[in-house]
Image (cartoon, rainbow over all chains, first blue to last red; front, side, top):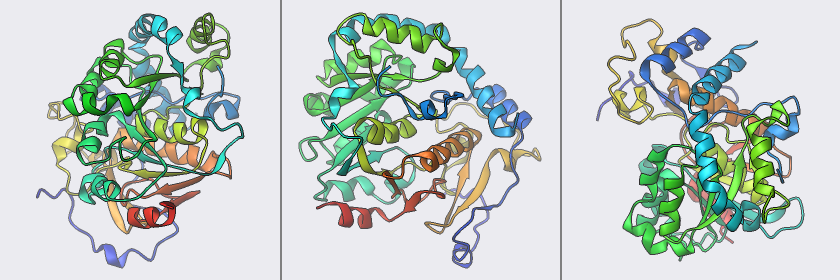
Length: 62
Length: 322
């Protein structure tokens, strides 16, 4: 089976139970845009944002 | 504008390239929307939520096969709701997770692309279709809904929110008025999709079905360490990735970020789309009402943190099967 990353000893890391342990640094906006434009990747849908924060969780009757 | 907002804007611009297609889809669906059922009809609870009701959302992330969760579910006595993402429906039915065994069986589709039709084009869906309740966005490609209808899946409609914040001239607002013009005087439920059918199905579980517990299997929002690079780079679509991503570039490991999941003691890899989806989904779970319990029984992936209870799937079934 193909392995992408060098295997870490997971058992040694399980005690960090309350926080995310990011192995790599965060993606920048430019890197994200470049990936989207060059790879041709497309997502399923966009995320809805509104000044009315409750509406972001849906509307019972629209 | 922070990074999360600017990435969401990038995705918004990407999706708006298909806006004309969405409008056409809606126009062609409208006569059927008028004559078919609102997604609101899948729930008969009059209160804000049902304290005794639970749902399992089935996604198609890599851990579902790795841990044989469909087989485990098929052999269980679970009595709650099954909400299956369209892309995993055929596998679920073939594994014995059928509406005959689980009568409260739903399938969700939100994507506006014709390629989704393949998820419904299978003899096993024709076999069980008349027992399945389908929850479809009004923007779904009509050929997808037609194929589901041909299998006798009962169609239930909902809106997917994307521009309602832009007021009376928004497409969400105008299309809602058109839906209300005939038979649906109270309109349809409108959901936040979170960008993908998995997050949408979680919203269907508590916003429409009003379940107080929603469990997730196959919702990794990330890849396993031993998934192939071809699969990871292409977001599982196996297109020619050689022209898109330079694997020797210094940004490569940031594009395909590796994170540790403390709930299950494992690592996963997030492509840029999963970084986008995962961040949003975790935000929405953290903002959900206190009466809702979200259990991640995926046993892998990137969904952990505030208000998310990581639990092995067998443990969930033991606790919620009665």
